[in-house]
Length: 203
Image 1 (tube, rainbow, N blue to C red):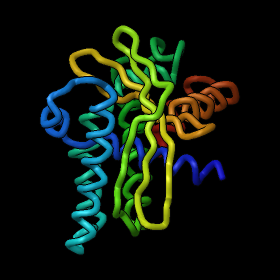
Image 2: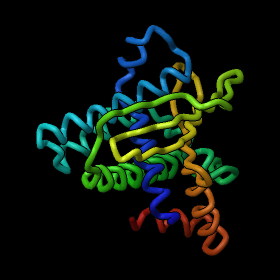
Image 3: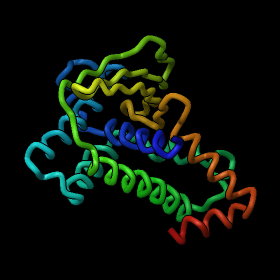
């Protein structure tokens, strides 16, 4: 169950990574509208690939790399994942750590989207309860994908530095950021920070 929920999170996070042109088309820079636009844009891009029978591993990976990552603040996310240990890494280790997390997300996303079959009657709406304060926001979304009434609820946590970017995706009961943080802390407790670095280097 945890594995399934995590995979859904990976889908939503990578989905939240589409072209920011969608946000400009809506004439608003609000985090709510940006969240809707990036998710809708990625899902429609995936649908286009599948409709054209072009959803190869290479093309889906290109979709992830070209549309997902520009909308995710990996620097901020990875820093939160390591918490107090982040400043104990040197610059090279920080880059390697971020690359590892990014690669893990991309790999899971590609595998999931290859098996994803049906996207039609797409409907995305903002649920009550989201918050925006200063340069941080949380946006709760309801996503309906197809005629089988498959529905998902996701909260996207965003931060604005130069623009609004996503740093965490929370499926009911599971935060991607917290999932990684707990795993990394578990390794650090058992093997120390050097052990975590060694584990990452071997993957």
